[in-house]
Image (cartoon, rainbow, N blue to C red; front, side, top):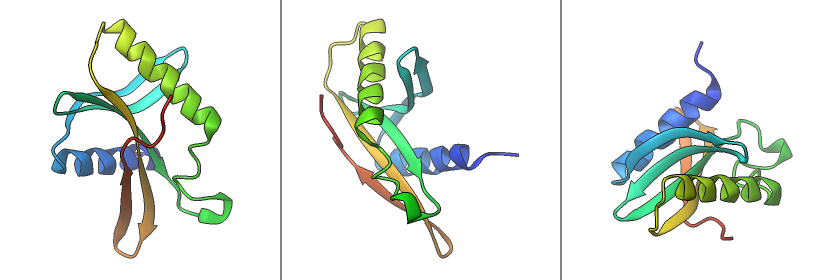
Length: 115
């Protein structure tokens, strides 16, 4: 059975590819954490956190990327850039998915937070 997280990542990936981004790697893991999607938009490397919330009772998908999660994502992105010896523009995006009648609503926040 495919999990909701994988389905959300698939939907986010499809959406971002339709916006012109190219997939570099999925689920990049290091000791500092994990980045769901690493993509390219032109020369910019885009680290994407995908969040899905079916129930907003405890906050929406965007709100779930708190300061602690942001710090982990930043460390993981820095690890990726260092490991691959990349010196190029990079940013951290969040794709938030929430269910709605007949599908999901996708909100893409570019450059969602900074170091």
